[in-house]
Image (cartoon, rainbow, N blue to C red):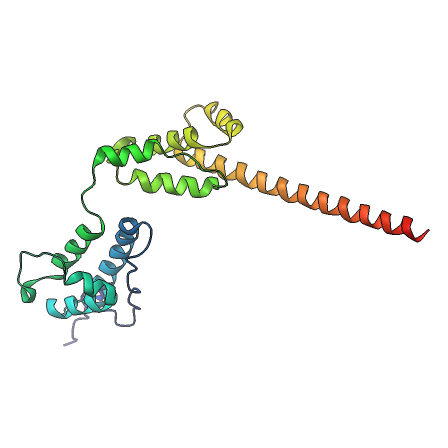
Length: 212
């Protein structure tokens, strides 16, 4: 009688490369931790099928890096060290990296965020999205991000153009912003090239006159 095949989900995928250790010194540690945690949890789910909890915990403490292990020693747990699960430890790190926010403060930072001098629209948009993530806007999240982008941008002409578009979605707003920024960059390149050409032409004319 043929032996039944083992399900792919029930076998660990041993050739997967583990995530790199987490950098606790990044500027937005809460946002970076969320992304890193998702990657680690997916890796554990695929590569550590059937492994003992103790082994999974040890692997996590190895992956999180030396700085993470130092932080681990300072974290508070309800469980004794030998009884801590992978989930318990990850949750403790999450509370460390992203402590409970003051919703009013987070929303204040969001609603007062404006594009800074010399800041690209793309960077401004990215930062507005990150700020919105901790504001508990729920169903209003996309529309408020759109409004903050429009209100906070420095380009008044682009703002007026966006305000004329009926039922403007966030995606369409961002698409228009990126198109406008790309157009500005190309125009600047053309102007810079024209100035260089004019300067070189002028220098060439001076040299020709000096030879006469």
